[in-house]
Length: 433
Figure 1: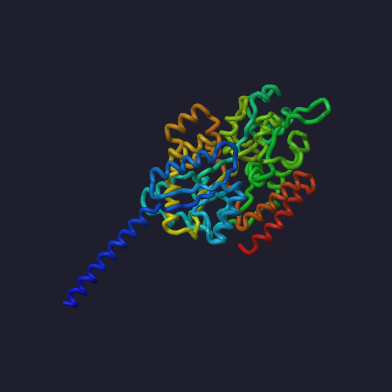
Figure 2: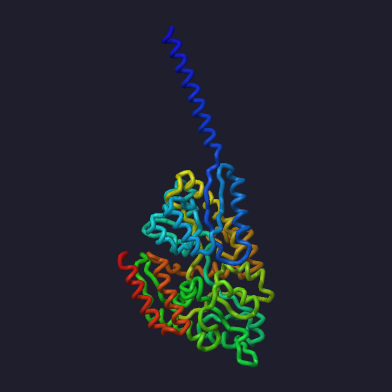
């Protein structure tokens, strides 16, 4: 009897434990998977409102997942915060960072390949649907490390009213370096005292000097870095010639001397302090909302060829996050880059729709018909090259940026500036050969 009683007690205890375990599992399943998401704010306009809207809509459709967008400052500030958090063991689960941060993130062992999450035919079709030009900065060594999201090319914005005033055809923007220099000279205005009140052209040289410089090196048929990210060609004669052209625009008095600020260039354009500006297509909606005049958007003027670097941010998934968080982040990334949402993001910001399918949506087709400027960056993609990116990217890029600013401020000749930058980059990249 005692044995039977004991057995009954054991069975009852097991049943109770099983119920408890089931209840704990149910409770665990009821707990949403929560993940943080670092997002940089790099252009004007109500970007945070759109991101909050996407997060809210995704959570409604996926009640088991909680997304916490964290607005981490500029791209540079965001990569520093993300890597600091990674080293302290509490990284974001996912972050939008520059596509050019790929080598740095790999070298820091901070991220996992996106290929880890590609399991179905639908996943494969989604990954293969992105524009090839954007994948140049998203893949290396046979693996995909980033997913294109807010991607761009540099485009040229110009004030059509100021073109008319200067006797230029407002529907024929400059298409070559020579035409740009000539138009910029005609568009520059001075007051009675000889002070410039309106510049012909502004190409920003703070924030992302290397990127704006790539509009000149690309159109001069020069490539700044190899695909492996371990060698650069800053001292190539074609690169020096491109820098000389930029410096000469300033010497001709058609471009501001010294360093032109990235952040204030759109404001200068709105206030008619410059007639032409080079900046990201990601500023398009900002320009549309704030330019109180008829403006045009065109491809970057060419010299030996057409072209622009691609730019902007990719989604990355961090290695130290839990598998459940990584899967939840992947689900969000796949959801937010679907054609309809990529189209919406493009219309709301001016960034390029990241897939051909996004331009096939009714919404973006109609938007492109009504506002052709929205299609310029996409049409420039076939001529686009990978944005400059190497191993030890922050320091190599700084060497280049320092050289550019030295030439633009007149402390070094373009040739000397690029030779010095080459030496420093060679030193930094030696161990990656």
